[in-house]
Image (cartoon, rainbow, N blue to C red; front, side, top):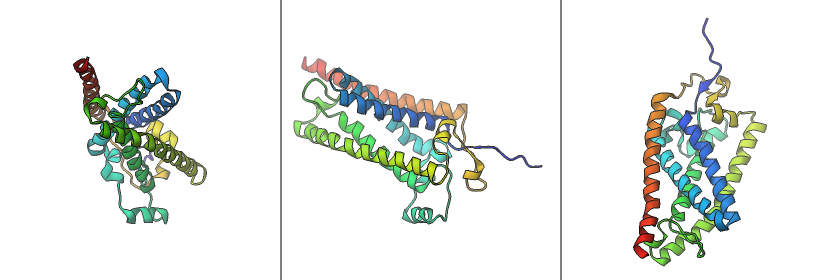
Length: 230
């Protein structure tokens, strides 16, 4: 008698940790910038943490487990059309979710990078603000503020899509990103599980360490600049 698996591992632990850490950083950055004042220091910290997370996810999209890789979910218009027509199911990110992932990475990546060059003209500036011309810093500052509202819109659409999948299509969306596991009946037949375990975690830890080192180096450039002009 064949043993039927009760669940299939789709989301590896590093991918899940990235997802929730990014959510915390985005919320933290938004709240801290609205509070202003001394909370702007936290806005910078959340922004730098977001940059590190984006760097990690870009690398993980190429050398992470099966369903974390861009090659497993980034598809062309034809695939997206078939999905909307109900002609296909998918494990991991569906074609619509893939668009959300790419949009989020692009928008949040730009927001984090542009923040490095911005200033509020009062007491807070990005680590690289003093290293570019004023016109360049002004351009980044302008689009940093404009992009905030684009991000708010995309996040709102993302949340509405989750609600629609849960309420209308009766698909579990939140729990799999917590446990990593998806019910077999929600997947195409024969879906293989993603690799997850100590070796995957070690690979992720090395990438995270490299991303953290890069962000700390960028932050140190501000300290060096302040010392040079003092």
